[in-house]
Every structure is written in structure tokens, then in C-alpha cells.
Length: 138
Image 1: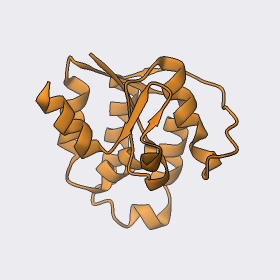
Image 2: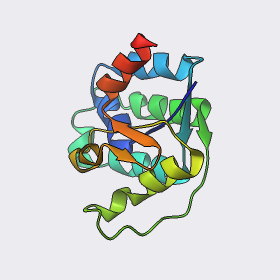
Image 3: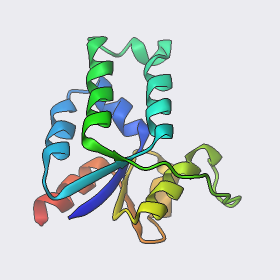
Image 4: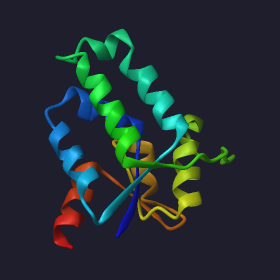
């Protein structure tokens, strides 16, 4: 079983793309546990309500559908921030802290800075499509 954290940028990306069914399938996969936090939920609601994002959303109800998926299928686990001054984007530290604290196998993201890390402690940092390949191979 894989324990994963999904970056907010992927939740938003899935919201504005046609890949919403893929995330639903992932949530229903018995070999995957998705861990979330209040910060992921807050950031998702903030970003999805911005005008520059809303213009790409075909159906406003999709915002709530993705929100419901996060709340329904994800295991919430609040984590305090960590300080890593060598990391470029301080706003993403909570994702690394959450991944480390829950012992996540994977952090799924589209963020190039996070992807460049490749790994943080025990957590592999990969794209959504790469994780889907890994999942299909197992």
C-alpha cells in the first residue's frame, strides 16, 4: 500500500483539466492512502477562487466536487511547518513536513522545484503521471 500526499497544484490542475476521473479512480484504489492537511484544503479553496483560475473552470460545481473528494477520501493529518532555508519556495515546506511526518511513500506534484528534489527523507517526489505509471506496474 502506498501512502501519498498530493500537492495543491495538482488538485487545481485536475480541477481545470479533463483528468478529474483519474483522481477519483486514484482515491478509490485500495492500494493508495491519500494524506491531506488543513493547509492543502485552505490553499485549494484559495487558489480555486482566484479569477485567473476561475476563467479556466467550465463548471463552478467542479470546485466543490474536488473539495468533496479531498475531504471524503483523504486522511487528514495536521502538521507543523518545518524550517528549511535551503529550499527555494518556503510556501511548499508544509508539503515536505506533511510527507515526512506521515511517512509518505510519494509526494505528487507539478512543482518543478519540488520535483528537482527527487526525494525528501523517505518520500519520492514525482509527477502525477509518473505515479500512475508506478501504480500500474505494481
